[in-house]
Image (cartoon, rainbow, N blue to C red; front, top):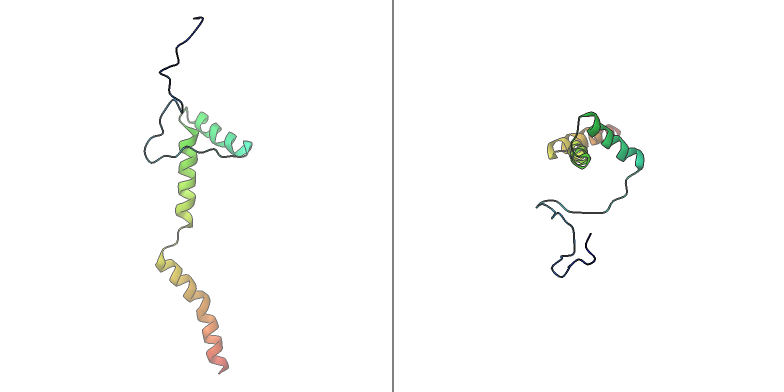
Length: 90
């Protein structure tokens, strides 16, 4: 080891730049959840648990998105019996 190091040309910040389309954040995740994702990656023989977590979040989001047609069909199914009941009571 040297007695002194020259850091005059050093740069602050992360060693690896964040790729486009990605944002570096700090997040708190329960240990058991994080362990589950890490175990899946380990069981698969390697990879990145963050990618697996991203994929799980994307899948959840896509499962929750409802098309306009599906929304209209659901609302009509919910409201049609009420409308028929009101018409029968007139």
